[in-house]
Each structure stands twice: as C-alpha cells, then as structure tokens.
Length: 136
Image (cartoon, rainbow, N blue to C red; front, side, top):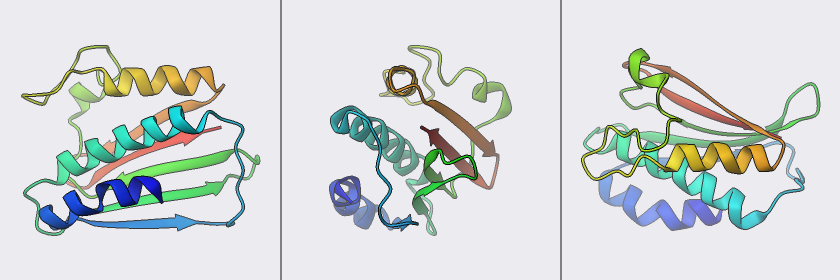
C-alpha cells in the first residue's frame, strides 16, 4: 500500500493503473520492511518506466502464498517485455537499457532477497509484459 501511494501520482500522470491483490489478507514475513520496500519500489519503478508512453499500462502487485507455504510477492506489468538477450543480463551490476539508469536496482534487489534467504525470478515475453516474483 505504501508503494502504491508513492507511485500513484506518477502513474496517474502516465495513465497507468496500479492494482493490489492480496490473499489471504494476513500474510506475515520475517524481513526488514525498509529493505523489502526498497525492492518493491525498484520493481514498481521499472514497471512504470516500461509502461511510459503506453496508453493501456497496468501494474499488478500480488501478495499470496504458494502450495509450499512460501510467501510470494509479484510485480507484473503489461509493457513491452524484456528481450531474451537482455533478460540474461538484467541482474549484472551496472547493466542498464535506460539512458539515465545506473544498472544497480535489480542487482541490489537480488542481494536483498539473498540476505532474506529468498529469491527473485523474472519472466518476460516481448510484446506481452514482465512478471517479477519474490519468493520468501
């Protein structure tokens, strides 16, 4: 909810809709809330950047549990997707496709997830969008 509040103004300016989905409502994590928030901010910023200029942009923030009981947090967008040749490099420090990007966001996000004994996974289809999944 904090990330949605943070990005709502920018999303409104760009015509992007942000939706939150949480089931069940009482999912608890043992994690540093500030570090986890930084990861979600980075992923939401990447999704917002990918959707800039797209008339029907939507970002979905999902929180749930899988069958193994792991908490899952997903940031999904319906943007242009990530080309397969770049997908392999997105976690490499300082790799960026953005003219003003530093290339440290996803690398840092991966390190934060490792510190929490979690993982970060990315699935992307060109022309359809990207889903980034955090597993705890």
